[in-house]
Image 1 (cartoon, rainbow, N blue to C red):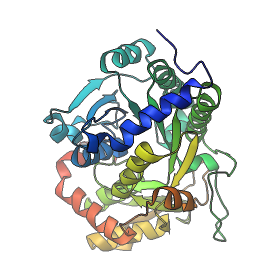
Image 2 (image 1 turned 45 degrees about the vertical axis):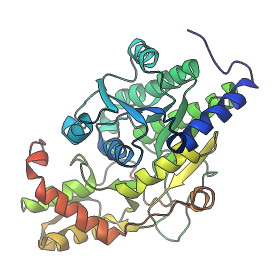
Image 3 (image 1 turned 30 degrees about the vertical axis):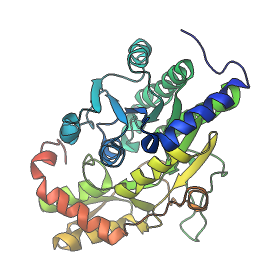
Image 4 (image 1 turned 60 degrees about the horizontal axis):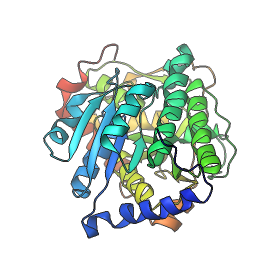
Length: 355
């Protein structure tokens, strides 16, 4: 298999050609082919729907292993589109990934595929390293061999946490100090991707997003879990005293940002993507209960988990300045829309064990 980018000058020339396809493909009728890994998951599925609606000139291939959090029902409409194809597979399977690249020859890859739940990573770190770090390396090698751009979808958790007091925020230049096996595995993938840019000239960008919420999120995550349990009048468990703070980003805003980064982001750069909606977990629970007209007596405090980060916050001046992206959905509007979706889709989340 030929290896591109072995010459330090080659990746720059290749990137200029690819960038023309990405930025002006629709207007010029060229289009591009995008491989989306983890596209049956929460953010990945929302990204697929956004791309099919707003980038009809492009074609898309989704690779997903369909583990517990992946759900093909989220892609039912996509499956009916002639410019979309789904393939079941594991990103850490080097042979399968190589065959798929040879068949499809994608222009770009967006890597959503990940094990993503902190609690699960504490119980099984090896699984997270295999998928999130080794899997990313397999994809990077495939992109290098076939001349595809690589967008790594990461998390604000790679920075570690901030004190509860104050209004400091992480910039793209902040040091990486992950606290959990999950965030450490994601930081590993970020560093690998940036190393492939530095060493091989592979056109790589990294997006570090804050806590997403919205429709189709697997209900082990905080907001859908709170909604589902409140709808069943069951206790809403919060770690500690509910004071941990996260920056909440509506998924529709997130996928718009990722589209901008994919098509106009500079190679070798990292972009923070935050919602500017800091909320303590206790306040999030109260917002859900208000939206559902349920009593706050449902809130139940439970012992804190090991290494629980206190606060996350992102400085997003760079993406605003360079790509013109700003979030549009307020936390309150996002919660109202998300609650309504889970009320209307009970049949989907009631199948989840252990809620």
